Image (cartoon, rainbow, N blue to C red):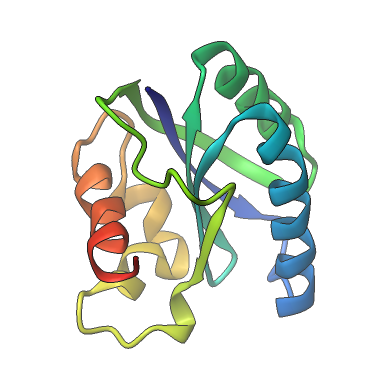
Length: 137
């Protein structure tokens, strides 16, 4: 199963309703495409893992990179995995501001740290995403 993880910043802080609208767009688009994954948001930053057929994921990522709501779209990591991490979610979602910080989630995307903290090619992003699989089934 192909996966791609990217980080980006939005062009301004998004309200909860704006993020929910974006999430609904993801769910409606991803289901028919066979894409699953998770979208994380905090303080104007996104981290998203997309998984599915490689050509479909790559096409979607190119569309996201052109979306005017995002800037500094940075591919962090991509590759193949033996199975989906989020097989039952067309797009799982977490607002890190809503979580207790017992696992250190919030600091990773706070104040643009996501863009510096997840330099392209770093495997730690997969460990970060796996925390959500383990702790938020």
